[in-house]
Image (tube, rainbow, N blue to C red; front, side, top):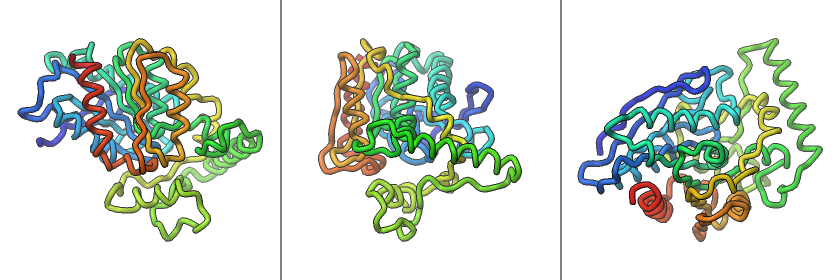
Length: 310
């Protein structure tokens, strides 16, 4: 397979760095169908997003990966900032970029694939951007609910005044401290060394270290550092507030049966309108599906083939 082409495109005031994967030689004719592939929180385009993009391009689709604003090779300060509104706009800006590829991409055949937090961001984007003709997610999560509820688990699926107060204090303290010391380093969202994760830590963080701290997902530009000023940006955000607005465009949400985040996909699909599908993969956790594409990739290829290239 040939290497992807480096591209850039604007998103609000930032310059987004992307990679465009062309349909592989000898692959099926998908009539100019293309898929934006959006990476997880703390990730970069070269990790799981690239794995899915290669699978899609091998099956005849154009696939566009990109680094979110403030992250990877894209511009924006402070580095590592997780701004939900910027992230939603990045997805829409990626669609805009694809619409300009005249003679290659059919603007009426563009879909989006969001992974982890981007499963939430891409859902929000699809709710308000009719150019997205099909939406799929893998291990979707909502950073807003995570912040307001104090965790990713179904048991934390209720708003917590203590979690909100703690997040806002952390954000405020960081803004003040960073103003006095702009070179201060943000804390890590995930440890990348398994030995650094406490034995009593939730399984989610152990699985994160197993992915980001190993050859599976390690990348020099993915250092897991997230400025706490991100938290007050997340407090008022909700990925899955209006999922019914995606219809009549098709929705597919894929999640592992053992994923701590499965409830996000289940709830979003329940609230959405047809056509919709929740595809649960037995024996897999949240991070397993980042690089184990054995079941997810064929499902996605079939989904986009029907939704975009029929």
